[in-house]
Amino acid sequence: MILTSKNIIVLKETDSTNNYAKQLIVDKAEEGTVVLARYQKEGKGQQGNFWESEAQKNLLCSIILYPRFLAAGKQFYISKIVSIALFNVLQRKVSEVSVKWPNDIYVGTKKIAGILIENTIKGSTLDSSIIGIGLNLNQTKFISNAPNPVSLKQLSKQNYVVEDVLSEFVNEFNGLLMQLKAGKYNAIEKLYLSVLFRNREWWTYRTSEKEFEARIIGIGDFGQLHLEDRRGEINEFMFKEVEFVI
Ligand code: BTN
Image (tube, rainbow, N blue to C red):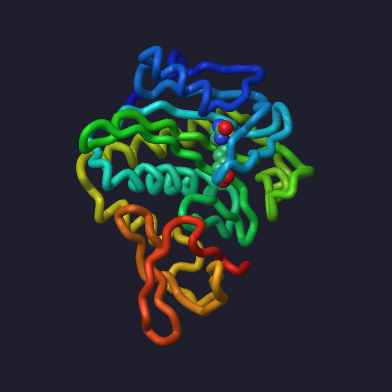
């Protein structure tokens, strides 16, 4: 994927950049097309949540890919490389950055960015992928009931230029995408684990049934979290089957 400015569509306002990108795919948009919005009326978060972002303040974008080289069963690797790329950008600016499984970007115990990836599959491989990113840059007041938002400005007292941060992200992402295309799954997995929030540390987790102490010991190909509890029992959890007690 080569991202150049000719591939960037900048919108003053839209419902959701992911939805806009979906339509572009129908219209056969080029790979690498970026939709950047100053404001989203219906920004989508994980699990049907709303993504809060004050107008003009933050990075709100969706990138179109056609990862036909990637087996459907390996789609979580897209999520991994997006998370690592965001981690790389942010850790140059602030400390204590990590990736909270599956793909929230945290600074300490606060969420600075969210990722919403929407894939389509054809046959045994991915066909298209919309990589939606919301990264809080310059917003200093959050009004929704999102539990623990934070922005770069709140942390560093500086202002950030949306396009500059986007271009830093795109550079990081391109490098990782090349690694993925080259089949460097183990290297990517290792990187992802090295930046993972609370990896291998004993903490409390919660399912619908109970709270228990456990530690992360790995991530499955489908993105399942592998947790070992205090009795040495290992269980796999899909997204939303378990949550961190923070
Ligand atoms: C999450 O809940 O953590 C995911 C949030 C993803 C938000 C971004 S903002 C740009 C893109 N367009 C959307 O509607 N959502 C994603």
